[in-house]
Amino acid sequence: MDPRDTAPDSWELEEDAEAPAAAAELPAAFAALNVNAKPFVPNINAPAFIPTVFQASAVEIPASDGAPDPVASMEVAETAAACVVPAAPVENGGTEADMTTEEETWEQKEEPGGEGEGGGGGGGGGQEDLGSGGACEEGTTRIEDEEMMEEEEEEMPMPKVAPGPPNAPKKEHVNVVFIGHVDAGKSTIGGQIMYLTGMVEKRTLEKYEREAKEKNRETWYLSWALDTNQEERDKGKTVEVGRAYFETEKKHFTILDAPGHKSFVPNMIGGASQADLAVLVISARKGEFETGFEKGGQTREHAMLAKTAGVKHLIVLVNKMDDPTVHWSLDRYEECKEKLVPFLKKVGFNPKKDIHFMPCSGLTGSNLKDPVPECLWYTGLPFIAHLDSLPNFTRSNDGPVRLPIVDKYKDMGTVILGKLESGCISKAQQLVMMPNRHTVEVLILLSDDVETDDACPGENLKLRLKGIEEEEILPGFILCSPDNLCHSGRTFDAQIVIIEHKSIICPGYNAVLHIHTCIEEVQISALICMVDKKSGEKSKTRPRFVKQDQVCIARLRAAGVICLETFKDFPQMGRFTLRDEGKTIAIGKVLKLVPEKD
Image (cartoon, rainbow, N blue to C red; front, side):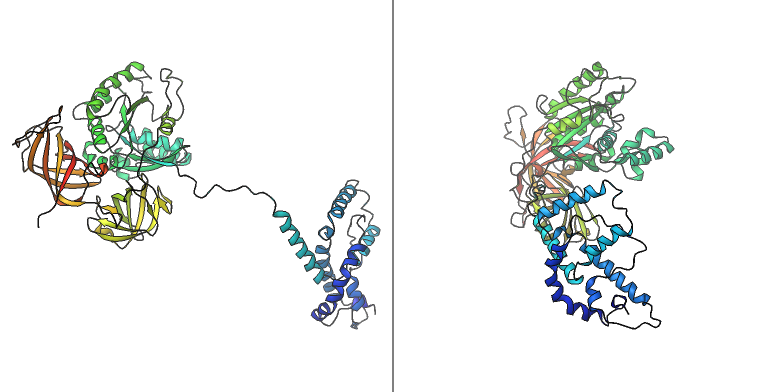
């Protein structure tokens, strides 16, 4: 019986025995290879190919009828096939010159096409050449190892594109509050900006548009990007301060969409206290501007509250310029401007430095991102480009940590929201919650819903805290660094300006105090002296009462313990508003903290 038709007793023994011989034969086998051989075309009718190694050392196993055992020959064929595949690309074993010549010849052979199709003859030659290829197992592993090493050597010098440095400077965070009279278009402009900057998908807006049409409110759909509450959507009025964010080339903006209705002014004050920049939205439509600007309108009150909350820069967006009653009219734009400038000047804004007017249309998005062809008389930048070009704000990174809490809720622990006024916060940092003096640890830190390891002043943060329950926190509490706690107390002296009050104010008068994010009832316990508006001189005698448009220094006592600082030390926590019966009565600044008597 032909030894090539039989299988050995044990494959393992066979391989182990042949391994040293195979290793010795390898260089000779490579040298004997014919590089210029014709391409191998398989012949379907050819006998099963068995490498010479197996032919030489095969042990005869008698088959039942003298024919080759089909299982054995199949196994041999399979092993052979497994061996052929890795042995074929011999270029890895040779020199670079051999590799190039081989590649060239293969290409040259393939192009003429007709030569290699000679059936069994060409196939046989190829088989003979391959047949002298030596041992399979050991040789294959060797070749693979060499191949791997060569690949590694080749890859090493390849220059890879360097990723951006991990400590690349962050974009500056700017908090923008949209304020103005009810129905001026604040939420619509916010929604349109989010769409133009790609923060809201077109599909989502189309869904909102369909839902709004079903309620016969098709012009409200943009505002639904910020008014997520069902009650807000049904009535078309913002109640809570909506939050969203968008990015430009240089800056990262957080939109704070304040409610315009006079019933929700306390919420608006909370939003304005987090802002660096205010956008006063006014409607150019006939009758709407006048309503907002009248004595009871929110245009006046919001501008004054924004100034009191510490907003230094104001952008006035004259909205609804595409309305049929306006048609991008320069006269109407100038009329609104003339009425507003004296009032804003009286509130404390400098018309040349602090205020910037621009026309726009929130519903169509005109002059928010791109200039408007209908409005040739306006030559300034569109709204988003103007925001991007504003100078940077100065913030104290090395100051003590101060984070007034705006809101809190439960979500796998205690989560708080607020704007970091000064200092830096990082993950796993130990902080103190004032005025209760609870020591807490920061578990997770989110800046505009993106998880970060550290945060700088000016960023709107969401923190998950450990060591405190949600019930133990109230809006108006402050997160501080343990080595530098903020001041807390009930009694303080302040300079106040009476803005609007029909009768006189005497000691014993009660009002609601809004200071940073804190809302607390307060009583004027004593009037200390009057202050002359022009000269700033203080009166020698104690006044018995104060009335509208007068300035005085008074002692105030809060119903509970509140966190506050003097205006001189920390302006963000030293300015406040007094409100009563839904109106803003006075604005003021903290001059001195009075220690509690035991």
